[in-house]
Each structure stands twice: as structure tokens, then as C-alpha cells.
Amino acid sequence: MTPTNTPTSACCPVCGTQFPYRSNKVYCSAGCRDLAKKRKARAKTPANAANSTERHRVQLEKFDLASRLAESLYTTPPARRLGFMQELIRGAREGEAPKVREVLTCPVFLFPDRDRTALFIRGCPDAYKTIAEAANAYCRTFWGASVIDVVKGLTPEPETGEVFEMSLAA
Ligand SMILES: [Zn+2]
Image (cartoon, rainbow, N blue to C red; front, top):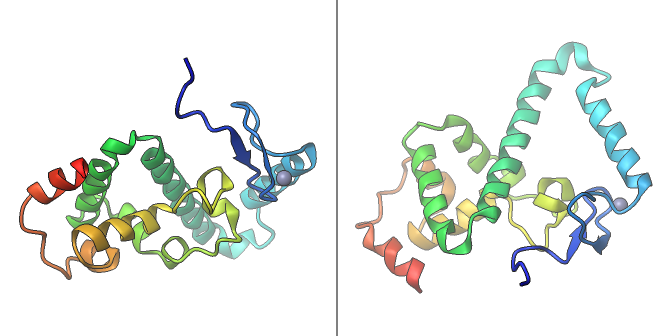
């Protein structure tokens, strides 16, 4: 039996090189692994930490939340992804999840620079959308509006839940 959702290749989050997938291998080479380690260490203790620690911490948190949301979306079985998005948008729109709203409306994630592979899960901008891009695509389809308009309550709700049911089947 072949597991259908095991990727056959992975993409190095540092340099973007494709390599054969192994569950315990994240980087293409020892060099990239070391570079990532150095960057991580630098991120924890930035040179200008004195005045930017708080801002930096907030940025890292936002970045981390965006990655976790994207990971959750893409590890959700495809048939349940619309439901996942629906719930995510609802929470952001109704004010339950202000941090999610921030991530979904942040230009860094909404209009990501595809050369910044670290913005994408498994470092693969060709295979994955950021969570904000996915939310925007969802909103355009089901609300006929941008994710910004939807989560800021600038657009009325679609008429019934049946729209979602039908689209799931399609
Ligand atoms: Zn690499």
C-alpha cells in the first residue's frame, strides 16, 4: 500500500533545491542546515536587539502563526479544506481571532515575494500558497470579495451555507 500523501521530493527552505523526500531531512545539505541554524540563532539575538526586541518578537509570532496555519491547511484532507477555511475566516471576521486576522491581511503573506521561500511551507512557493493567499482565493470564490474586505466586515455574508456544501461536492 502506497501512502498517497507522502511527498516524493522536498524543497530546501534555504536554497530552494529539490531533493528526494525523507521525513527526517529538512535541508538539502549540511551547508544549508548550518546556515539555517545560524540564521535562527541570529533571529533570537538580533544585533539591534535593544530597541527592536518587542517588534521582532511580534514579527516572529506572526510568521510562526502563518506557518502553522498553512501547515494545518495543507495537512487537512482536501475534502475538508473548504470547511477549514470557512472556520478560519469566520474567526477572523467575528473578532475571535485578531492575530489570525492580522496574518490574513498582512501584505507580507498576502502578496508574498516568491523568492522568500521561507514564507512557504516546506519552502516551496510553487506548490503551496501562504495562508493569506489561500484565504484570499477562498474569499474571492465564496464571498466575491478580497480577504481584507471580508475579515474587516466590509462585505455582506454570502446568502446561505448551501453554497459551501455544493462547492465541496463540485
Ligand atoms: Zn539547500
